[in-house]
Amino acid sequence: MNVIAPPTPVLQVESLSISFPHPEGKGLVPLVQNVDFSIAEGEIMGLVGESGCGKSLTSLAILGLLPRPGVMSGGTIALNGLSLQSLDAESYRRLRGKAMALIPQDPLSALNPVYTIGNQLEEILTTHTDLDSSQRHLRMRELLDAVRISNPEQRLKAYPHEFSGGMRQRVLIAMALACTPKLLIADEPTTALDVTVQADILSLIQELCQDFNMATLLITHDMGVVAEICHKVAVMYAGHLVETALVEDLFASPQHPYTIGLLQSIPRPNVKQLHSIEGTPPSILSMPELGCRFIERCPQAEASLCATAEALAFRSLSPSHQHRCVKA
Ligand SMILES: Nc1ncnc2c1ncn2[C@@H]1O[C@H](COP(=O)(O)OP(=O)(O)OP(=O)(O)O)[C@@H](O)[C@H]1O
Ligand SMILES: [Mg+2]
Image 1 (cartoon, rainbow, N blue to C red):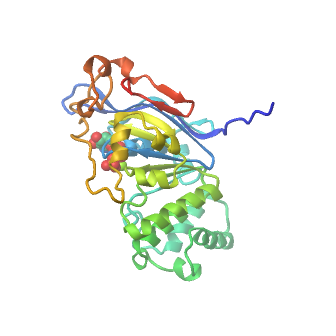
Image 2: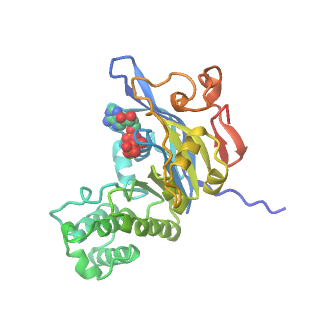
Image 3: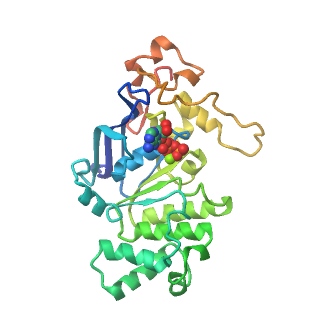
């Protein structure tokens, strides 16, 4: 019998918890709790959820850049089997930009206005590679080529203000790719851009992920984006993963009421009235201590079932489709 081994994950996150001090001094509050996922080579995983649910904190923990006074209060993060939480600050710094890279949300503020694109790209290559000056130049041309920026010679001499928003995002993608990272993290890479260029940037990320065989974590609040370019998806609500599945399975058979609410709020032709999920997520002051954090907004909630530790057990529909709803 021919057994095909599952691809080895590039990124493996297990039971990740991130806590902040309670503003009224009542100890630490886990804003992200027991989050598990993995991403393989060439795979794009969407991490979706409303504003404030902990998407960026999760990515910052992976990058070793958690803002103080936040702490990683539990779990493990491994990149190609290397445990990241044991790294010292200097080793982590070397890893960022080399083995893992971030495409930021705001392409304007991420570039330095007083240096040319060429200066900024070359600095990354000088820091992270042994290439000599002419090799660096060649590599910079290749990178602009990869992100479909024409006239590379001329473009390398230009300053950020000479580029449109979409072009600046392409430059930042080129910078992220400079050292052929294993893991690419894109945090809302298109929210600051015109709708007309959003689709181009997404399909560029999709192509590059395949060409460079990178594991990609794409953070978004937009299920439409997930449908467009992701292979699998993790749905986050108030710091808990509530459902993880392959994209086609999630759209075909969503299980958690929060996922269902998100899917119903995707704009569609012929549907005039958009569905929205009533209410707001719990704040750090009102986080339920036990059970499902969606309880206050859930049309199906039943306290005796949902406000229990048991409610958070993962239930499997298949090895790749899991959810955390007792009522599903
Ligand atoms: N530096 C900080 N100090 C205190 N709380 C923080 C800090 N950074 C984030 N938080 C809180 O952690 C929670 C998760 O924040 P995070 O930025 O991860 O959300 P997000 O899902 O990325 O949201 P968005 O879609 O708006 O970017 C929020 O409630 C936020 O207020
Ligand atoms: Mg964010």
